[in-house]
Image 1 (cartoon, rainbow, N blue to C red):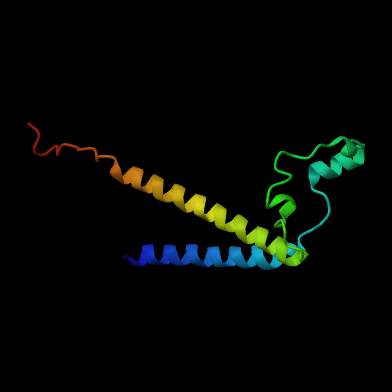
Image 2: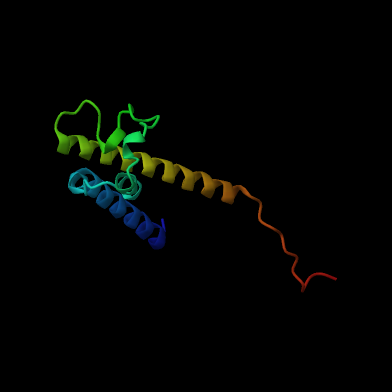
Length: 116
């Protein structure tokens, strides 16, 4: 394995570890204030007409793991699962695209010196 390839994997590994630490440990301390759309709906006065999304009953809805009573642990687990799923999809996509690109035959360009 070349040095460049090894250092690329090191950067990816460090990035993954940092992402897991941030998602698992610091996500609990994220702002609890409403996001932009929710804030506008609150200010304008149509927040009470909002309906739950189709994923409201999912295991990771509202940035928390269902069935975990400790709020800090619940948010941390949801963050870890989110990072793991995102990383798995991204790595799978990158590997698939890399293999697909390598499988394409190289274009043969004739050498002008040997062409009559």
